Length: 454
View (cartoon, one colour):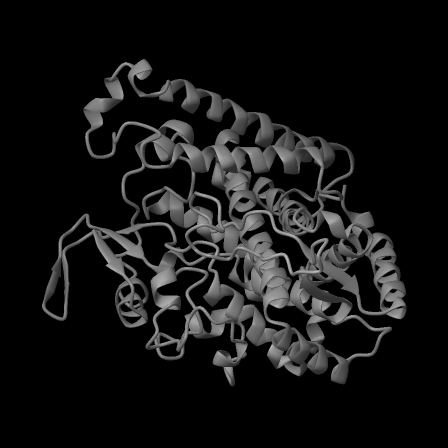
């Protein structure tokens, strides 16, 4: 196993030699037994995987995200601020609805209007179960010793039963969503969703229904929790660093009044807000180690040999908390990115590790295909929340601040994603005029944008 904790080596190997570092290590239980080899996250970098990436990029390419998808992102971020304004006690739930609704709308043409919408609740449970099954010790190490697959399951927590039940849960969620689109196409027509695009190409693609369901599901699984996690991290960071929040308020107020919420057109006028988004990725990356890569041929760098088949881990946390690259790495300091306010894809494509802002989206050919979408959605959510609200530590009955646990060891759930444990803050609208604007913008989004989705 090779662990890359250096931006230099991550760039040299995963980016510049990506042809040989884009494989996946064996994932027999989740990849083969649960998803029957059809999940793009676990696939080998073969023609089947390339086809799925191509289809993803048809929807997620930068021109699509900067034009076609932008009205949806603007509208969903307006609802996010409305939800926080009207239901501040449910702060932990609103970011997940926001991110899931964006992905659901683009993939199926179906929104997630509330945080208790049925398909969203099922997805949260499903992702939790997938993560739990992938934990070390949850199943026999069949990737290392395939013969253990034949071990009586009662000797290992009925793991095969868990696999079967999880496979059934996946079908229970994704099959009705695909069926809903098939029925809608027969009655209403094409809504230009990702699934519509795939179905329009079926004469050429010849994908099975199961392959289509899992391909769509991968987008939901990958896009919902990561964005939500970063928005919650924003709320923590602002409460813990009032000087940063104050600087953001000052910048936003110099550009926008109380009757105009930020839009993506304001990106270049709000460089400090852009720096905050980058620092969120650096300070508390949603996926601290990314998903493992594997090497398809023997390699060598700086006199070190790397055998074919080696598992290669991108240690995002280690790179982002390198004290040489980032002085005092536990300090939330957006000014680290002074003069580095282009969107993340610009730096990821540069091939220069010194210019790379962060590795939050991964690296190489396996880099997150949703990078262009996520960058715009996160900027809008961050800018609108900071425009509309003041976030402070909650006070207890004695008037003392209630601490927020952001310790890496104890403040987060176990699992692949770095999801914060429940926390409380005081989040207040900055003025009554801003409250009026928030409600008006959300109402406008309902009419102008959301009415096009089911």
